[in-house]
Image (cartoon, rainbow, N blue to C red; front, top):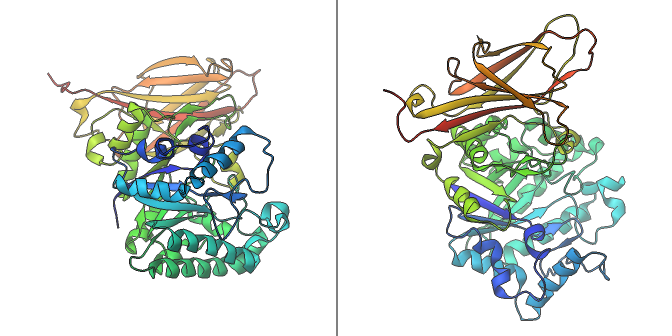
Length: 484
């Protein structure tokens, strides 16, 4: 197992889409150079969408071949940026590989697996086709991976099984999953065999998968067998397109089975605090405090490193500092943290991923209690003298001051703690209220915590449902002890 801090570039949004052609080497090196000199020791490059590859492939179709003349400037730039390097005798992919190695980073090529450029559209699962039931699709994608592994000096390839459905088609229709799960497993074994017998040095195989065992089974991915048989060197649990930071991703099951089989786990650190897929919200990047809290919880799960992407671009001093902190648990031990409980988006709901929030509390005559558990990794018992404040924030949609609530943290009432109320958000200030508790007498604990919220009474002429939309915990540290 290897300790890795991984940064991902998808070849498009912060690279080939934005630079004006012709591309010179200084521009071509940007994805590597912007994270060089930080804690990042592994660079992963997304070489594909389902409609083409972002390098001069000999086995499939380069992105842009079939859509000329171009209908948007981003696609025009992709084609001509790559072509400008090719015209100079440079391979756009090899340029990045060489630069990564010059900067002492490993380089992995990440491939989305639901489809490929030039595939007959009728075979796509999204169009009613049967996807990987067709052996020619499996064989074509294998050939692309063989090209990336054998024709380029990559350190490995990443099998992106988690791109569907937001980033491409799934491999199988729902009804084909029971019969063809074994076929996908055999295909993974063949890719592994190809990579591990590469001469003179073997290539590693990584896999992006879904966070829960149930979701992977649903899509035809027998993760237990992949790991038990040694087909995979690392796994990254994630949801493509969800992108909301979550300090309590349920991946303990994966860490256990992976480590039992000497496989590394690098969970995805999502880049956003909010985004447009949540009602009443716009896009906001996660703060350093939010990223630290998430990483701190991951280290407590005994992961082997952190994988992240899509930081605010161009990467500045703050982003580079974050990439350094993420690589070492000691660097974030006593720094401010902001824990975020996972919240649903359109993407998470479409995939079938169950988040802890939102939670609905109907206004009915009987009292209703809703409970939620979450983990915090700060050592509140032994480090409390260095902690300057602990703040619990709860955002409840449809809440009014005449609603009477009882809130317990680990069985202790927050009634005596100071509570500040303020409007829900800037877009729809009327939507609900934030409750912000300054915790001085009732404190959380390291590890599992439980929050109980009970609606005791409500206005008789208001029948809308309360919605617990956000739960957050902010921990602030001081350099000096608070003890007198």
